[in-house]
Image (cartoon, rainbow, N blue to C red; front, side, top):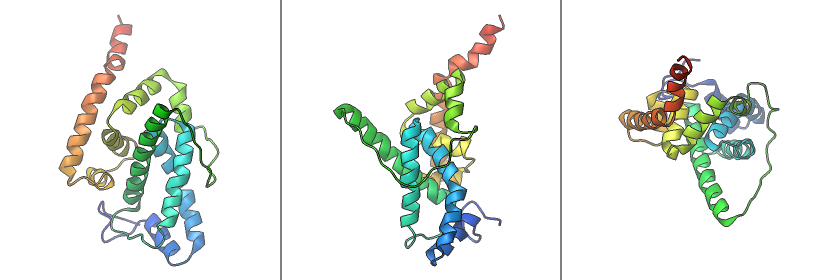
Amino acid sequence: MPVDSSGKGFRDQEQELMLRFQRGEDAAFDELYQRIRQMVFRYAFRMLSDRGSAEEATQEILLKVYRARKTYRPQARFRTWLFRIATNHCINERQKAWRKRELGTESGTAGLDLPARPASDPAAIYEGTDAARSIQLALDALPQRQRAAVLLARYEGCSMREVAQALDLPSTGAAKLLLHRARARLTLSLSHLLTQPAMEAR
């Protein structure tokens, strides 16, 4: 079903499933869960850079979607709404992790079942190559909202309007500026990768 970038005038399939769930069709959430769980995990992994933390975050994000049954309103594309929840949650989790490291404490959670690790799992890709590790480290070094902007625009294919909505930015111009600053930092951090082929050719 077609949908514009604002989510107005059209409804995507995930919106329809969430609205059916809201009307009392529990099976609609099961289908929605199957549609979005891997996308949520992929995004959480890239935000948190740790498989265990990403699994826990995925469980908690999907639980938040479930609990939004009565309050959900289709004012934007479903994935924009979902990425807003996921971004806020992951930023909060990183802040908690920093505080726990300072205090030397650990904790864990249990919740919804997650899919088995497929060959295309981003964790497998991340662990597999030096270049991927360098890119992830460079992403980790970005300020949190800049990292989210890169992930949404580059890896999740979001438009600037969707990035702005997901990050609660005032305009697409603000999203473009945030992304421009993030890319400038990444270019500097990854300059060794950009120059490596030229050095090896000598």
